Length: 260
Image (cartoon, rainbow, N blue to C red; front, side, top):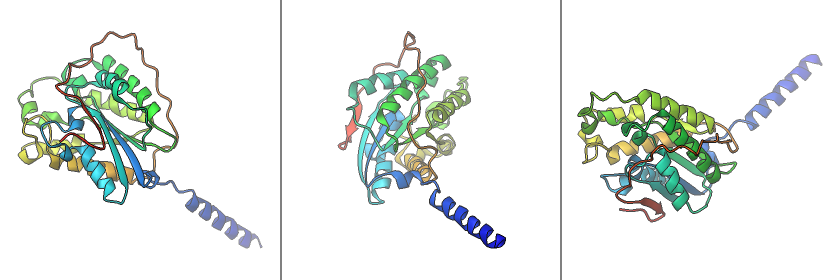
């Protein structure tokens, strides 16, 4: 009798484990999925057709699985964290989103705003993301694209960019807001000596490279969810007078009908 009871208990535990197995990010995305991509020129697809940008290719990849995808993008040239926050306040329409993807930080690094200003800007973005997400939303944060391997970056190889330090701050931020981390740094490093992976301006990347990024995002969504529920953002010191980035040449804000 003791053996039978133990066997029954084991079966019950096994069944419970199977039924409580974590779902993947893809599983949790509804058939009608709303995505918002937030970032800078690497998000807006500078120097290439917008349909080759990673937000558009992510939209296509999820759409190919049978979903109806509503894509919005708030991103533009020269934006750092604080400039992105300011324009989210200006242009976000108040909707929540099923998937929020953040790709930011290159201009904080290149324009030498400093790590303290970078952290302050990320804190502000944490609050922005909190207002955009629901208990079932997925959030992803992209690592810094390795612009150092582009012709533009190679011409400035002697500059002492704290690339790894900024990436570490960004990864900690992703963990703090319970977002999935997507490594596009190592992926973009493949552009070294590969002109087909670089955009015509020699600084940004081509559609072929952004396709690899979109694949990495889909692969990340295919894993068990990192966490459920909304994260609690850290509170930034909004009294700082540190600068934000320069005025962009044009605003890239798209809602279903993106710029081409």
